[in-house]
Amino acid sequence: MNKQQLFENIQKKQSFLCVGLDTDIKKIPAHLLETEDPIFEFNKAIVDATADFCVAYKPNLAFYESLGVKGLIAFEKTAEYIRTNYPDQFIIADAKRGDIGNTSEMYARSFFDHMDMDAVTVAPYMGEDSVKPFLIYPEKWVIVLALTSNKGSHDFQFMEDAQGERLFEKVLKTSQNWATDEQMMYVVGATQGKMFLDIRKHVPNHFLLVPGVGAQGGSLKEVAEYGMNAQCGLLVNSSRAIIYADKTESFAKVARVEAEKVQQEMAQYLAEKGIIKS
Image 1: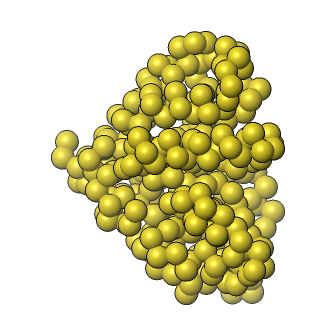
Image 2: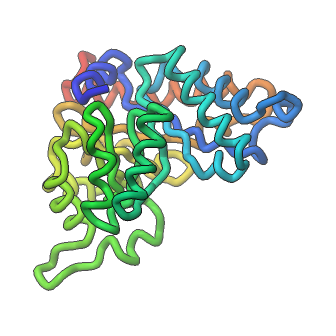
């Protein structure tokens, strides 16, 4: 999926919601544990319930890898189910990979050749040669960690050099030499608030993947106000607030209600920016 197609889908659905499939076997409704593949059955129900209101899904690899082979099978089945039944959805493997070139090559081959993901999150700490192997796939996206939503982001990401340039700014500036806004996005946490203004000074046209709305306390209003550009330029992720909104057999219906609430708020912000008609 290219940038224009993603933007058109945002306009069509009046949404820039990404639903995070952080599926924890210990948190899903108890009745699903009786099924052959509880993780997949949960994901399938969530996807069927929320697909009308979102443009992307982001399964977090850690939740699947923690279950070994069964978890990875559920991950692949989930991706295949989305691709087959909802081909307009953008699928992000939230893997945060980052290693030297030949290892990154294998990661890229895994997510893009084997699993056919649309995008993968990548940690840029090891530099250009750790990211480049992901960029040889022309129709795929690399989402680079830039400024995250966790408390520990202040440990390194705000460190300044002698010229006052912060580390996250150096990441933004340097990485633009590796690819264009047609193939690279950035992770920026929703809890950063007005920092989106600083982000946009460096990457005015890139899409930003924004976690931290909902359970982590980030403000969707602030993200839209400070981070939205002329093509929206945002994929705002919500995981727990949607997928774990209910733990009964009605969990999917409740997830649908919560996803629609977020979509309705997003439609308002898109209309205010003139991206869709009010």
